[in-house]
Amino acid sequence: MLQLEDPAVRASLAGYLLAIADDELMIGHRHSEWTGFAPDIESDVALSSIAQEEIGHAKLFYEQAAGLAGGSADAFAYGRSPGEFRNAVFTERPNGDWGFSIVRLFLYDRADAHRLASLAAGNAKPLADLSTALRREEKYHLAYGEQWLRHLAGASPEAQERVQAALDGAWPEAVGLFEPVENEQALVQSGIMNVDSRTQADRWRADVTPVIEQLGLRVSEVRVTPGGRSGQHSEDLAVLLEEMTSVWRSDPEATW
Image (cartoon, rainbow, N blue to C red; front, side, top):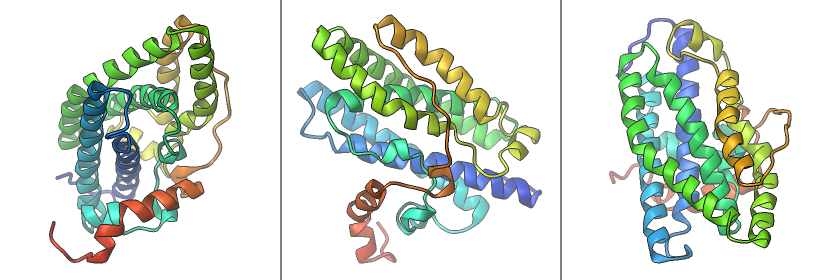
């Protein structure tokens, strides 16, 4: 468990880990909604596996956040109101069609890779070790998302247009994955993160743009506005949480 003496750094790190955990939980839940509905049995199994891993990663980050801020991982995951969640709005949006889900998977996992890389290179050894381990698990997610994106964009001119429409809808909110949490610079200055979210965003753009352009697609630059990291969410989150937490809310004190 992380041991940090500076209260300001502890609070900032707890907030940052909570945002990561919330992202992972929401994207994992959205992926899980494809179970039984994916285009083929292989995709059904693959996305179900990815969903399970993302939710597992969320649990690990909730546990780290709880160790810093107090409380329990379950209470963080299921016991908060929508305004207390810090996930990017991008992760809470409904799945839409398969094309949108694949575009979101591709953009999210590339963003998560840069976020984990920053923590893996940091000096908080328990967190760096955890991030290093998760990066190994995420390699399959990265390959799967790019493989499907290439397949969809190259299937036909009509398919490419549909992927472009999905990208147009996803990109502005995908950039919100790099909205910084409060006092993030304290994490950089203390060496817990080796680069801040703005630098991660630049690296993410440099990573995903060549793939997108190679497929004949395009992205547009947008300004990041305050959103999920400050507790501002869409109505989609309230609906998702109502469904996701119904069993837990029936008996919050139960041991699962």
